Image (cartoon, rainbow, N blue to C red):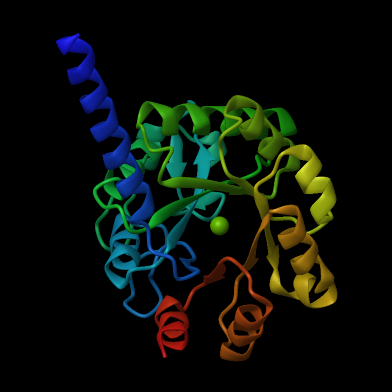
Length: 259
Ligand code: MG
């Protein structure tokens, strides 16, 4: 009996502390695109740019993930790192070059470990479509979910991807994962049907199809837009009531939202 009470108290406390952690993420719509790098000269997708997005208090910090020839997930925007094509180069070889600030090319595990040191900024994990094959895109998607689970980072991570098949693979591997689709060629109802959490479309796509914003809301999907660097576009999306705005200018967007 005593044991049961103690167990009950422990579980209640555990649930309470988990819900506090979950509620502590910032709610300001600002997603720093490749981290916060532009205003301060950090390399894109570096741990320094992630830390800057966290310091600014962004709701999310976005980063891009590729898989090396020998199967290591690494964080970089371009298909190449310092002239070396990531998908056909081994990880050890990629370590021979560094970011301009001296950081090494981060593995996904290292990046997630850095992101988990705080609880205000979500980690917006972009799975890059493989240039080699759709099969490889699906492999990257599955490995990404397994890496997030291994790092116990599910609460921090929302996924985005241009690869529809990759997105479906994430949903199949972790049905609770939040996955938004980037390519702009699916209607909100198609995404809802397939189990996506929302869309993250180019602002030009949303200007052409503004009705998709309300349709998404009605379906319970989230709306995000990239890459929104002009003040007038930021204001338009805020008026339309989008959930997130992805920008290279998080400082500008934060100042608009806070004033
Ligand atoms: Mg990206």
